[in-house]
Image (cartoon, rainbow, N blue to C red; front, side, top):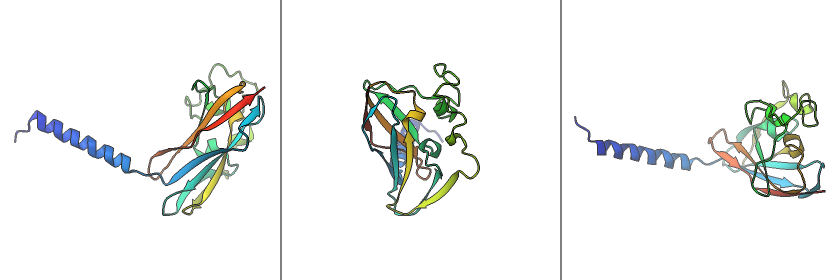
Length: 185
């Protein structure tokens, strides 16, 4: 049987369209909202945000969480950008998580500085620190985002923060809203 080149191109194009539409059909089972108690902070102050994961499906979902509620240990990717849209420098601790660069420490983070978080309370994510919780439809779980722990100290200026987490069920990366922060002197 002879198959023309054009027929094969058409079949491949049709298959690509079908796969793309199937990928678009995947709907996340949760949403993530980022919230800040304060949007203006002094340089050097603690910057804590809440990542609120809400089950928007019509069934129970399970979520792995850290008992200390540390967002970075629960699989959240945290991104901080300055007013020009540039991603800010991450801390040694952030790199130790392996989310950026497979655990390599960037050269600008000297060992033993305030950015060296090895041995900190969040590093003990061993036995007993993980919980698997079931979220009923409409229920919300809170994780804490400690920007000062994950990023180098922020200079005065405006910053945007966004988090994302992959939905294991739908395989969709769910992004939060963007929170704008102003760091003052």
